[in-house]
Image (cartoon, rainbow, N blue to C red; front, top):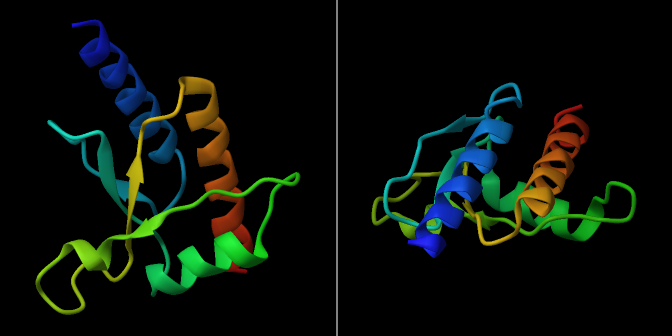
Length: 108
């Protein structure tokens, strides 16, 4: 019960923080420890590689998994990423802040 409660809190923190970013779409997952997030980008594969290799916010970046590989249909999830909420609440908030700043720079 304690583990479930902790992951529900983490999920809620992640979802609430992501919803503050303009253009981001995220549904509330019901049974997983990750969520699929629609980003305001054309190609999540390109964005995921860019954020990992070329972006940092105060010396930190985040790793995200493009969601297209989780779909059987070609080109499905092209602008989506998979984000796990296995970090503590403070680190989740910090990670979303990094993602927000990355999206601003990437789209400028």
